[in-house]
Image (cartoon, helix red, strand yellow):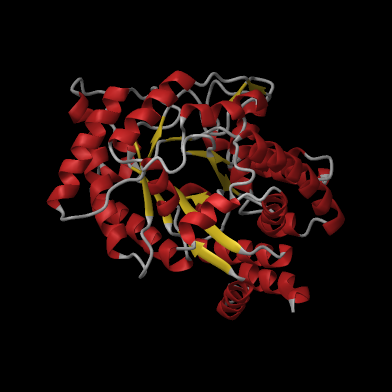
Length: 415
């Protein structure tokens, strides 16, 4: 039966086949694969049933999703990893052309192929409100678009949602509550909306965000003001379970910091601030702080995250880079992609950017338009790229301390 799983994946991706999606989900259920929320695991951390000796990796797969997920799952099985998440951000869903109704079944198909059994966690990362629309006559349309994305994602089996209203933080205001007001108000409203859509037996894990990633570093005072305002607003809406985690800015940036040559520059992460904010988050009933923009950091940083008590770390660009920079990625396709960027995405080029910086920062935008061509790369090449990816997952699972967490996860979910 599993010999034709690739055909079902093709039908889901290119034919948008509901029949193929349904068949994948049916096989996953028979195999013992269960979709759930990280809520129980994170609540157990709040109750000190497990301490900060591991940080949960949340993995964003932008391209070659089926094969990349297989690489993740091979290592999850081998290292007995239970605590890991597959996610995709609102922006990634758009520019990679991967709706959650595709992303989830494709990864389920990878799990079937690898013989995986147990719990899988899918997450909506950076379900972000666009500030330029929110602060305009398009506000209601923007909120409705975000609600539709949330609804569609939950229906696809995404039971972890990270609300990102940090784009609404007004740093031009001197008063901290005024800075965070729009952020905590909308986060509370969307939390209530998410709770209204929860499937029976599932408490969706909801995260918030204090400050915009890549901007000003977050402070304990920012967190206090946000949480006090959020809890106050949420209470107005009823007896509703609130956030279980909170994303903060500590010096990292999405995609990494790129020099004029297009090469990454080593970034500094304020681990002391991350530790303080994770500790403070526990006092508000949350499992800890979430680190974003981390995949391109130096390898020696990763074993420091569990020491801070950070509950989750979001990883994306490094995997994309491994694919696009692999010697097994066809040179002619790469050249075609870069020429397209120069011709079609030139409006995104900043005045102070070199061409190399521009290409590095924007090449992710080509993953959707060139999706079919990338997926037509010879399988022998994809297999070699997958080997490179798998080495990265080996390192991350070890350094983040999630190897041998299968028993811990099963303990909280088998009750």
